[in-house]
Image 1: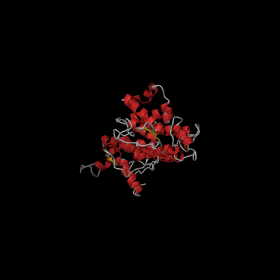
Image 2: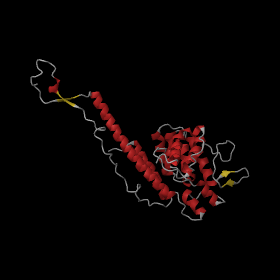
Image 3: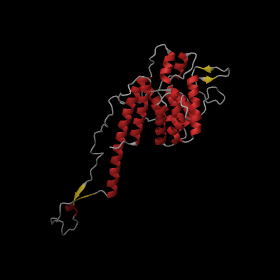
Length: 319
């Protein structure tokens, strides 16, 4: 069976997370992406009464209406006719196909949620003990610069919320702050779900860490990964500004850099990053810091469904 766009892109995101695990030294390149390799689609048991409704068949011999012939055996060939029109049958076939696709997508979503939980269990723990410099290099590469490495690492670590069934793209990259914010820059002002998810997967395939992006010397290589998104010059400038802010800290008025990673939407703040607006900052607070009590900005309103789900989850109203 040919994979749907949803399934294909889900696997692309899983591949990017697998490559990130490999880059962190947590997985072997030869390890299967999913816990048990590629899993088969589980079929939901069918309810024949509701999901595979059969057309009611009528014996043509019961259709005789003439009083003269009512008691006379009908001359029939045994042919049956349906009480459904062709349009009704076609509509029902389409309904059955849609339900089948929905079941397969629901199964894929359940597998994705399970996979994301496993990825977070492997990536989030600190593995270098009190060697904060080594931890920073392990996670984000050799281009990291800081004076206080403990502050540097702890302020950049993500503490994401539980995995939801809502299919927010940010959840695939919430395990790392730089990746989440890069994802927001790339998805901004793109309406096509297929276009933005494909381009974002391509970007992280080439640049799994901020150091790998910072060391890129050819803008053409970046362009090839994200050209379908448009507004390339703006996105490139934003990605460069974000990566510099992340690896070196915000530039302070005294000429030093702040090791503590912070974000702001205030124009004159040293923590304001070009291209990282209210939507990106709200996404960071919600998906990397689990701040579900926050008041969303006008730009963050697209996140309201996730925030509502998170609040219900915290109250035990959903699982």
